[in-house]
Image 1 (cartoon, rainbow, N blue to C red):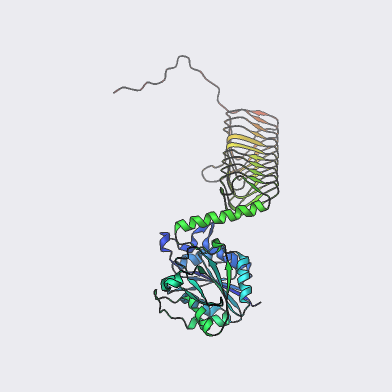
Image 2: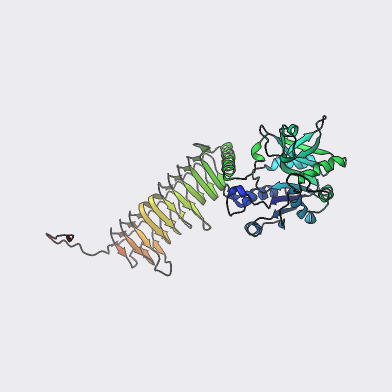
Length: 461
């Protein structure tokens, strides 16, 4: 098989999106539309991927730059699909197969493109087509009495009889580059839109006696493009349903496949359960037997076997990542920020926030607490309302809480400070100095009561 070169048309403005952002950079599943297309192209082991930019070219190229095998050509001005591919022709070697994709058609499956390339086989033009109940707006596939493809007629140029045809061209083709280049040179703009149509190469192929193949599919989602926010939302749901079905095929139990959002990659072990309205971003790994409660948002985290993430929990590891150890329990209403590392059987309860801190096996912070820049030992019990005061206005400092420490409620631990193993911090204490192992440490003023004290009265005017 000849080498594969992919051309992605990404020059359109997308007026109906009503957005200052180039259309191909709008997102589905947390990635730009055109990034989905690039990722699919990379699965084909493409020799090169050429993105044709135009409207917002600088923005599009900046967003996509640095990817292996990807290069850009610009279409200025935008004079049609044929004109777009003409701009890419000089960088396409004659010995390859050119696969033409659209940057706003994100859900074409790699196996579909592989089948299309197989039909091309380096010898003929191959078109990806689809039969639609309502083909309005699409180019029609015109066949002869023997069923051979003879032309593609754009909707605006089609006769009434041609508009009755329901087989449409998807905008995706595979063609030997040595044949494509001379056909591109013969294009003209003598049509209703005064544009250079790439689809006109079909009639050139027929005139030259070259075979034209059509790979017909019945899955419209694979060829649906995005031209409006309504279409973007529809493809988002189609994409998410595809993710949900793949997860369930692996054995994941989803409470409702229609209420799941995967905006990155989600790897699941055996017997994972995910409740409704959960969002997964970046890279998330769920170990065997993990249970995720409803309405959780989890990004860039590893949740190890048997852990339970209860309702309304927000975990975002950003670049540093978050780890939740085996059999740990987090939530409800907990927040784990970058650098949170929870050991085995750790309990983190409601309205507890943890950032850049490690909690060793069996540690507990069950409610209304903050741990920032802290190292927490095994079996520590961290009381409600307690915080680490880790920032002095200029620098962050670390708090070390050694094994088996009990921190009472409403304590302030002013870092840098170390609490010795087995010690106890009395409720309401503000700790500014290291404490000895095994000691009870209390740092609060003596309680004073003033009998018959009267509150100030509001002055009437």
